[in-house]
Length: 377
Image: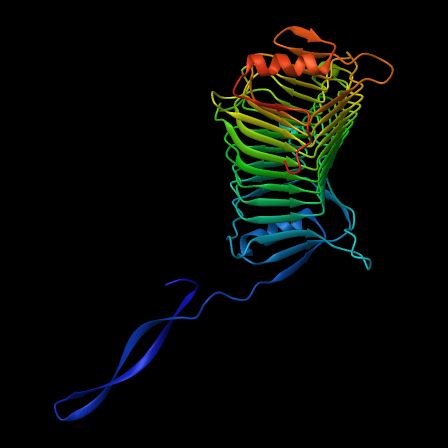
């Protein structure tokens, strides 16, 4: 049986010694769960009091205002009926300003992330903002199957948005992370099957988007970034100010139609040893412009490059491939305004892209290498 149950008392007639007597028998009758409820909330304390009552399918609407930091433990919907946490919308259908403000406090001072979800599952979180934390802004910790939509994180001392500890099968769509002291959007330890779509990370202290396995060492697998923008990152540590980066422990990562512009590090950097053996990296249809270091640097993994544009990298090196295996390099364009294009392969610099491609083909004879733009990537 599923759903809620109640005990119903049913009279049953039985014959005894030629007479009838009534015997009461108990039977469990399934009555099903109550219909989903909508709750309107105007303070963090109201939500804390409400949370034990929430059931799959319920919706919580937060009205405009500044809220205390919120820690949500063990809130679970289902695949068919997620629990929804929404900012209210105005008459034009625009999310109202709902900001969870940690007031600069970190774990050691009685604070923590402005919005912290731990051991949760099947949630829809829309239009909420996480700000001014002494730690991260919005964190999903061991919380799989969560969808973030138009959520924003800003002015936090560590990462803006962070997925950690097996928060797999999550999505971030149309989210932003800005002016955080470290990374904008960070994916760590054991997270798999992730979609990061139409998100923007700008003016963060280190990288815009990054992958790193630092706590448990469990790899991050099967992440797709699509139509994401990283710009102006590296405000605190320019050496780590990449648009997109992988530090360690990744496998099968795709960058599709992404833009990295004006970052103080690389446009895209895949660090040495950061990709697992036989792990694949796909960079397709991306634009890398005016990044202060190289446009693309890939130092590990099996790499597929198609239809990318790298232009005006600060070191005048549009692409650098070292100690990685190339499976495809097709339809890529490299440009330097008023200067010579430089491309590097395994420590050798080429000032002619045809020569560079010929070197690629020689180094990786089984790779697909061509100038033609692919119709699909």
